[in-house]
Image 1 (cartoon, helix red, strand yellow):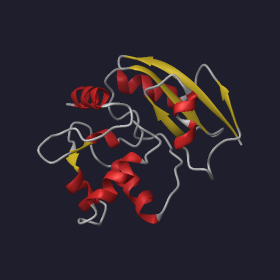
Image 2: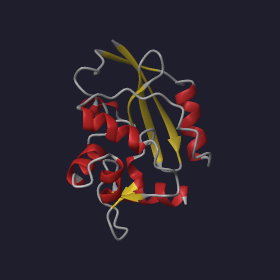
Image 3: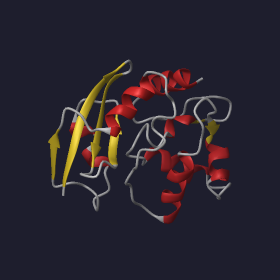
Length: 164
């Protein structure tokens, strides 16, 4: 399968997305390097080739609109990720956490149907390949600590400030 990639300059730095031919996001994040994204795509979805494009249509529009203040622009973008039943459900739940209303890992575990599985909920965030479109940055530690984020704590802090 051939996928497509594009990098957009944002206020937080370069943001790159990798999509299927139909426009579903396979991976994304605040980087200009495609090599930072390909390893996080599940092996069964990993493309055999990635062709650069200047624009990825609706995905590029959503990236720009989100960074310009339309916090719901990312909501309708299709994402393709795969994993076990819990991971798939947990990623779906992440997409329901509203901008400006971050939740804790503990509450996220409960929303995902497994209140005692706080570490599993954190792992779902860590394994999320489609940053921004599956907004794992909206999950924080109890007491307001940032927790981890693949693209750095400062990016996470700025995203949460942008959404508040």
